[in-house]
Amino acid sequence: MKCEHCTRKECSKKTKTDDQENVSADAPSPAQENGEKGEFHKLADARIFLSDCLACDSCVTAEEGVQLSQQNAKDFFRVLNLNKKCDTSKHKVLVVSVCPQSLPYFAAKFNLSVTDASRRLSGFLKSLGVHYVFDTRIAADFSILESQKEFVRRYRQHSEEERTLPMLTSACPGWVRYAERVLGRPITAHLCTAKSPQQVMGSLVKDYFARQQNLSPEKIFHVIVAPCYDKKLEALQEGFPPALHGSRGADCVLTSGEIAQIMDQGDLSVKDAAVDTLFGDLKEDKVTRHDGASSDGHLAHIFRHAAKELFNEDVEEVTYRALRNKDFQEVTLEKNGEVVLRFAAAYGFRNIQNMILKLKKGKFPYHFVEVLACAGGCLNGRGQAQTPDGHADKALLRQMEGIYADIPVRRPESSAHMQELYQEWLEGINSPKAREVLHTTYQSQERGAHSLDIKW
Image (tube, rainbow, N blue to C red; front, side, top):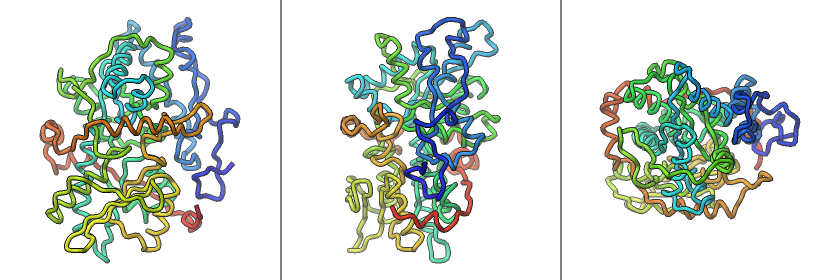
């Protein structure tokens, strides 16, 4: 069966109606290991299908497929159970980091404000045995700030001889995998080198936080709660900075929907708990977000920064103009009657493919594009905005969009802790360590011409 997003002539992608080739190997649940029937035994036996991932599985190696099948709640409960046993040498500190785009899902599900939903989720996870619950907003701060600097540098270096623009965002793992494995070097050269919020969060937890707690990275089990399945794939791709000593930044990724399953089988009367921060006993007072309609807001923040740095223009309100469809929008800055900055947001694979075709033909007028694999953006990730039969839950998505829009916006430059982290953790804003920890390189392989000639 050919995948709906695949540009290859042959595709091995399976659907959920196919047999067991695409599922994880059978393994006893934590309850079975204890010889008893635990309250989460049904969920622990759940399997994750590669067809849930937006990246076509013809881009996933056999080894990655095995590892991806292990990215489920069973691994999470394995660590919880080990922590309950007497052998303290096998105990681990359990840390859960929650993506901001997951919180509107829980707010809608429990009919709570997003801050109360965050506290409800934190309290429940801690009742299971999780030690710390963070949000990934501070990691997105780093990703955005580094992307801002990189765009300004690329803009100033761009010329006919050195075509450094457009810069394409790299926060969406489905899009990055598609660029690396299908599109190849001509496109990956345009990817922003700033790491995604998930990758940065892995380093924050396994390096900075581990040092604060006097722990080795191997003694921390780090779980990411995310809106899409592609984040599982991203966890497998993460590099290993020397500070992590070979330990992955994220040990397990669970979707919002998987966490909701756990909550449905548990006790929702548990006491709510404030979300932790990386800074001692300080707690998060309320949920804030970045200035994006359904994402981490790279476009809006980079646009404002570029307007100020390059043209000394202060932009308060970023005005989007829908073009081909609501998932392809444009933002421009004019100076003296001339458009000097032209940014775009391209969500969903149809818009991405059109963007790539125009870029290849040299008819692409944009300096920067925020690229997301999911139509509708991160809120519409397949791990949370789906009906039981696998279709997009449009009513739920509209509700989540309204909830997300009401969350107060906080700009990354306003974070009181960013300068502290740059100096104490990374040895300076433009230090070699900051470059190593906050930036990445991309794999690429040349593809046949047919990869770019498909009409969508």
